[in-house]
Image (tube, rainbow, N blue to C red):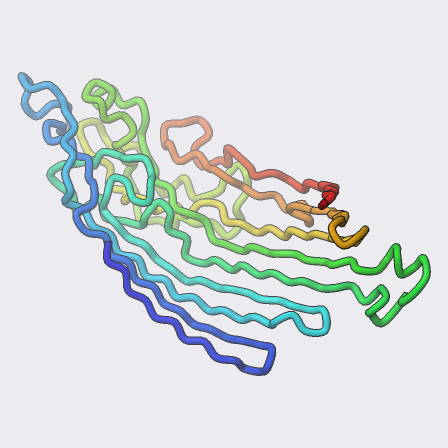
Length: 298
């Protein structure tokens, strides 16, 4: 792997800092799995058993541009956000720990080049901290029982907005693929129609009409990772209070809310063209969850 990067940052004010960074990554001699004795109709050489050939002839390239803006903790408020625009392309069977997939056609390895399975074009992550203005050293409720109850509370949160990672339209259960040990490597045919939909639903997440089963004895024309999967939109919040009992003892109270807005988060989709649920959402991420936590330090 070869990595190059640069980063520039500047203080816009005494408390606000802005930064821009770029990272490029190139992978050489990456793993690629091939099936040299596999043809569209089965074995190319009938008297040679099917086998998988592993070599290091693949490569990858990723470019990522990041913008950062952060406000240091001042007057009880701190906040920041990071936006990353990136793109990763490869023709490898596995990159970054992903599972290996055998190339569809050993005589057309160029058709394996496409988006990396972990490619995520857009990602924004923001966070904030707000010290509530109650308590002995704050603006309101500075004394008495009210200060003890409402003082020293801190509100924090983070938000993540991200586009999805890509999926491949595949064919499962093809007789020839099963016989040669490469089941799931045959891709669907692509007819050129737009794949993404403006109104995505759980029963039709992408345009299934853009794909079809390849004719018997032919390889599919669809590229790798051409279907962009579900993105992420989630807001988490937390409320924390630290109580000092003595010089060495303290108590922390926390109320945590994951996915505070209870937004439906699609996780996985079915991209197997000969599946009855082709194009449908098959999994979701957790819905809203509330936690109450206490911690005693001594």
